[in-house]
Amino acid sequence: MEYVLYFLFILAFLLAAVAQVRVSLAFRRYSRVALASGRRAEEIALEMMHSAGIYDVRVERIRGHLTDHYDPAARVLRLSEGVYGERTAAAIGVAAHEAGHAIQHATAYAPLRFRTRLVPLANFASHTSWILILIGSLIMGFVGLFGGLGYYLMLAGVGLFSVTTLFQLATLPCEFDASRRALCAMEGMGYFSSREISDSKKVLSAAAMTYVASLLVSILQLLRLLAMLHRNSR
View 1 (cartoon, rainbow, N blue to C red):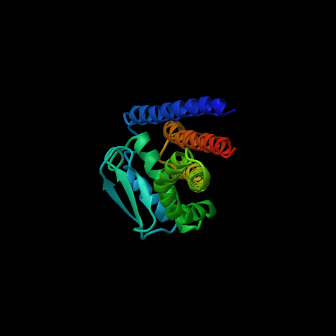
View 2: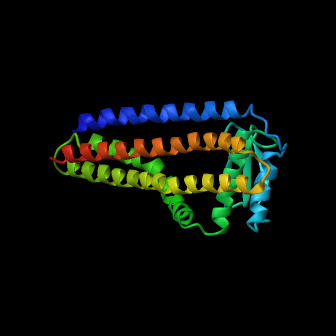
View 3: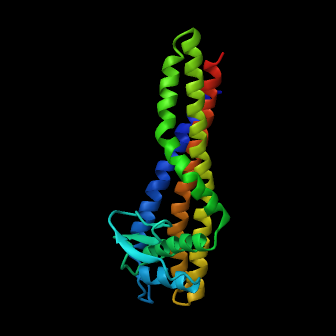
């Protein structure tokens, strides 16, 4: 059984790598597709937020490639260099997606609230889980009391790792809903043709698959760790 999980984990890891390549290629392709309206990405994001009654969120440029994100604590929507100021299908789609997150925050969207509450624990778990798993598995090589200690350390590590998996699961509805809001807003604005909206949708769909693939990798990794824990407890 554990060998099957190893095999599936490798397949999922390859799927995640392919998903990352696909989103980069899609963004690059549709970054060359200029939209007829001439509207800039940050303008569309602001219009989306204003139409939802949100006027206290500013839009800033941030360095990096696809580093776009909404910061609920600072009330800032940050757009990367390849998005801010651009008038392409890729840039508009990404900016509208991030504006969708700002609207989720303003409307107390339940999955986002749950995900936000998980952030501190998920950050702690991501830094600590593998340390406990590694130390625990090493100690379990000994016998007696130390072996029992190793088991409980590894159990704690696996428990923490499950929190990161739960966090990724909670992320999925937030990402899909933000893309849905983005595409609905683009349709309602009247600036974009159906072809232009379809191009933006392809970028957002490719990005969504990276979250699906990452969740799959995390689930299979968790199952592999549970199988390893069960084997070592005998």
